[in-house]
Length: 225
Length: 300
Ligand SMILES: Nc1ncnc2c1ncn2[C@@H]1O[C@H](COP(=O)(O)OP(=O)(O)O)[C@@H](O)[C@H]1O
Ligand SMILES: [Mg+2]
Image (cartoon, each protein chain N blue to C red):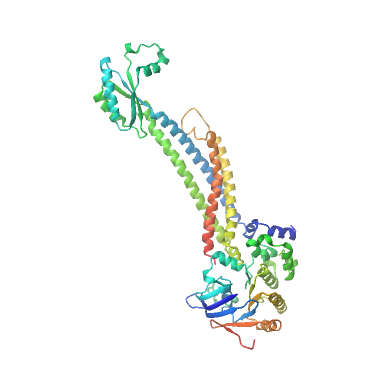
């Protein structure tokens, strides 16, 4: 799904990440870990073309990221579900409209069934909050809504950036279970987190590989994880 | 509204893009008001242009055959002087054609006054030469001097020529009215561009989120384009209506050719201002689209 060859990215003159080479096979479950500020979010942004590599190549669904047109990037993002670190909701729209936003703005907007949307909202346990505005939600509710929005287009790839960042342990496990369930449905999942306990919990449910970003490089994590 | 109703409304059609981008009351009101004011002005520019166009046409038609030369000389010399005048006119720049009126022509001209049985031969009736000018016209002072030298009995009568500068001014006014229309259109485009840019940057976060969830530029742009086009159309519609009312209420004096009292539309030209609202809408459409795509290019 995603392939990187010697890719690098830097916000300034200095590269933040370099020599990134990796391959993300379909149906896999990956964790991406590393200390805060290591570049996990930056790495995920390379995966949905919000950032383009400064050297090397990033290939998304077989397309070279740097060669994509703006419409090409938009179409690609409809196939990738992203749970952003800060959720990125539109605060003036009620929750169910935020969740349906990717469908609304896509060419398939007319195809959404309100029954399906209601089912999805129920699946993440937010039926009672469907008409609330995002600022009225708790951290856990926001994260679940973000996950619902990420999967409404039935994407093949789900990228979750610190999905358990602002929630208690119980809610973390609930979110993890949702992601594991999605992986069982055949979706490729990448979770960026610095929460090692979460990774350990996941390893009991799913065959997960762990990538670590350290010193600007990406590597397979040790057997301790 | 029920959730179900909300959801149905949500999934339906294009209007949804309008909901995703929040409305800004400020830019909406400003666009409406400016479009109305511009349309109002455009109606007057059009009225000025068509009215002065009418005057220019009427006056230049009248001018085309406005001068005659009268030759009063002893009977023996009339023929020679007429020839001299015609030869002279042939060489004068600005004269398209010249023709000596025949006896029958002159008789016809005089008949209404003196009856058909006028014995022309016995009366010292001056011979008339009719001049048709080119649009540029001739130099009447120069012609007068040369006539005095070559045909002492010839008098140039160009009493209608005083209108020539007025006809030119009217023609110029028509052009100015057209230019004013173009300027008004340009100002409208500039104003809509600024308003659209400000709406886009006020909604930058919304636009970024739309991009992130996979919206194409054309979809995002359409939310703004639709909005500004409708505002410009509505504003210009109201402005045009008010402008037409104002023009209709101008005092009119149909018989005088004066510009001020004639500043109005006549007949089918009342329909011309109806193109102002669609024109404003088209201008807003293009201006917003260009502004939106330019702004979006800056966002990943
Ligand atoms: N837009 C940006 N401009 C400049 N520097 C940035 C930007 N975004 C992130 N950084 C820097 O890049 C580094 C990595 O950030 P990030 O990818 O968010 O790390 P992580 O997600 O692992 O915490 C940090 O030092 C951060 O300050
Ligand atoms: Mg981060």
